[in-house]
Image 1: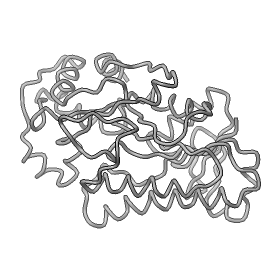
Image 2 (image 1 turned 180 degrees about the vertical axis):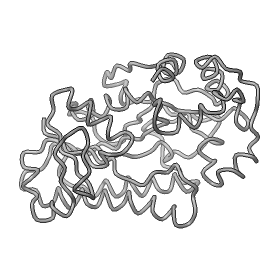
Image 3 (image 1 turned 90 degrees about the vertical axis):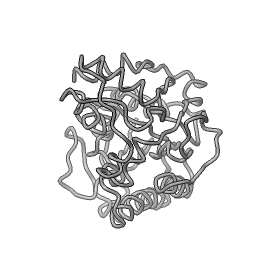
Length: 296
């Protein structure tokens, strides 16, 4: 298949492009800058595509992963960048598809599990309603609305959970206190972490591209979410470090500001659609996932 990826130089994008190439797909990276090279694949810019959309002739799929990182302090300016980058990317994909004489079969657009809001007691799957209770859940709701403006192809909205990778993403920062011997429960420890191993993350995107019966929201989370307390115990075990030093909520709020909501509140999210369609997770247990991650 011929697949275009936006956000290909990002954390998930780089791993996805490498995986798609291994699977024998032809991959094109769509970037804001012409010098953005990922794994040696062809790169085209959005400006080039304005007048040369023929570069994507016979395209089978588009995967849109573009967006400003949320792993920064949420100042007013940062919030605007986070929102605008996602809406702009979805709008650019919609405009590109509209100009194409032959539409791709599918567009996989990144989204987030924050769309469900936070809860220590509820369980969410793709049938659960949007619940915009904070900044990030509001961003995701607007992001998915923008993706709905892409007309023609099958649309899959992948609601990404906490992606575990040994070198990038949130995990290295989460593991650092444990490596220093001062790890422990964050806040109440009751908040849910709906996680997924990076390997399963890229595999499920490919699965959604190839499976024509999948459309709409897809939760990109492992089928066994854990509480923060359980995650900390598993991480301490994987690193052979203590899990004795709790970090109160007010300290997290002082350090991270509003961004602390990602660690202090959570959602128990289940991948109902993937399981119903027979996706085979490589990592279903947080213990086996972390055992692999800490060796990277």
